Amino acid sequence: MSGETILIVDDEKSILKLIKYNLENEGFKTVTVTSGEAAISSSFEITPDIIVLDLMLPGLDGIEVCRILSRDKRTSHIPILMLTARSDNSDIIAGLDAGADDYITKPFSPKVLVARIISVLRRSRKNVSLSSETACLSIHNIRINTDKYEITVGNKLISMSVTEFAILNFLCRNPGWVFSRNQIISAVKGDDYPVTERSVDVQILGIRKKLGKQGKYLETVRGIGYRMAENLNET
Image (cartoon, rainbow, N blue to C red; front, side):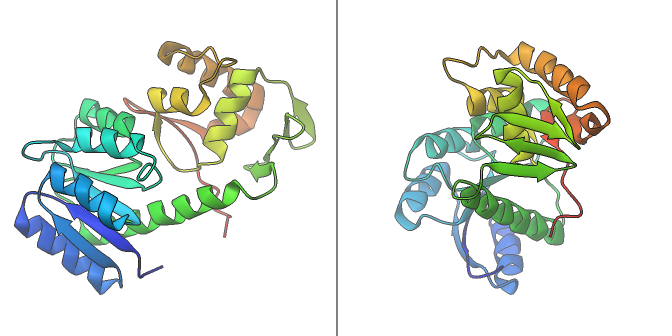
């Protein structure tokens, strides 16, 4: 995977140079900017494949940049990997809720950053392709059929509420990704989905119970939210 254009946003020039050097060595094209305002204008102009965004920026900060880009139809499809010098759960949650797809804390290993970028790009491509694929999905011996509105574990048919079905389907189609409660709500919201942030925990508990042993793959990321474990046998 190379040739994609990556927009790097950071007000520290040394960080910009470090990221730019390592990404270009991997075959990526890069564009660098030092402010939130420039990040937004560049995103509209070049439509990058992914944005590496520092949260602590002068003027318009990274959180607000995330919100603006994720709400605009021209840029809402662009994955955002946020960089933060603060590892507080509240900062990470704020970034994810604002629209970031993943995060990495400073100081960071350039090799780890490159790996995370490649992972986000790969997942983004899979998510796009899902819309044109079959309604059936199988992971960890959990099979979901959205046409028949069925969930099976092995050969056992599992009965779930509309909300439980929607949450499990969303998490299973994005394995490995951590989602805050608000992100889960946004993904399944609608007239038939009476979900609140507090009730997400209750729904997850119910889903785990119904999945039995397979419920262990629905993981809690303390202080942030939930994720479906990746299928390591997937190629």
